[in-house]
Image (cartoon, rainbow, N blue to C red; front, side, top):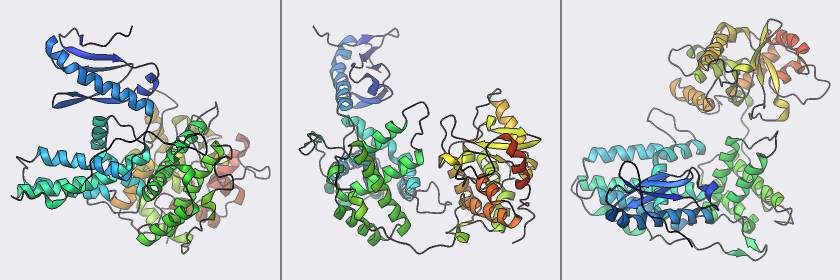
Length: 540
């Protein structure tokens, strides 16, 4: 006989909802949040092994009144976990955004406050929609940054409306909802500002939002005899598969983010995520729509199409060829071309390089902006590589210092041949880099595996160069520009091709290359590095 849960009296004299997660969803439930109602208010509870929340009363009679609604919310959460993430339609996402808008308009109806408050809200909303956090930043075409700022600005509201309806949605649906919600919140701010100025006409936008209708159960795919896979399902499976094994090479976070953006944008265009109904015509229409909007560069659009092709190919592999047996439908879509930009335009000019390196000496900079430009300038490394350095990766051989760029410890490099040991240039050492490493290690109580830099180093340095130093030349790549410049400096200084290729990670790993096989080769590599002159002494 099943025992029904009841309010639990705790030591503080307060009654609680205290319900164990069912065995079939226990693993999924851990770490999730559930929104629990108490009359006109709600609370958000984090689940470990149980769902626990105060009923906010010490009276048993009142606790029994509040308990059924609280328990119903928890059981709806279990059901949501059993269903798994759902895909919201355009209409459903718009309806949820409308609910948040309506709540913000209603709560300020009697006392809307000062107009200036809502003007400030609108300004902050507009910044987030452009991928910015303040007016001093330079607007750039960076969908990942925009996604971050929208999440930071509106993510809590998304969680609240999803929690209220006990919904778990796909990543693509979340990005779709964020977009609609940002627009809805602009409207709410405008309505409340108008009310603060004495106009209660509501702007005429209230009726445009549909009522929310619960998603129907997934229809069966008659071709495969099972639920149709979505692009998000395919990507999630890929991430899971790549993480398996003792020496696994997990999918990089940056790669995952790019693929999720493609899922959101393509599925917003076609209206759903199901993978087995993708056609060449749909992809071509999506391409033409992006070209006609004129917001993305041709190179970016081309990369979007390539990333979609990659996702479909993952799906074909996971289906053992049963999905699109005649071939990947994206293959037949011609990708747009773009006028070539000379490599020199992507590269730091010597004057710019000097300005950046000198500016790193400014006090109160982050560790990333202080040291990553120097390490990249004197190695040609991709900035993601030194960003992953640990204290143990800085080592000495024959009186010369080196940094180890490696995939060990769950780190990632662009290719398997990017593993290398790079001499640290005397200019970097003269700046006090070894003291910085020693301080980091001491701060971690001697832990050799302590990270030298935050994972966000790449974006920190890029934003600092663009927004603080005002080096805004459109073609310049603020992080990758060091790689091109170092290669030019190495050529000019007469560095051996094999040494240059090894230092920059362009090695093929073949037996005829002279560096990197053992420590015996490192002193000779250090001699080659010493050929590179100081950037601070170089002339334009």
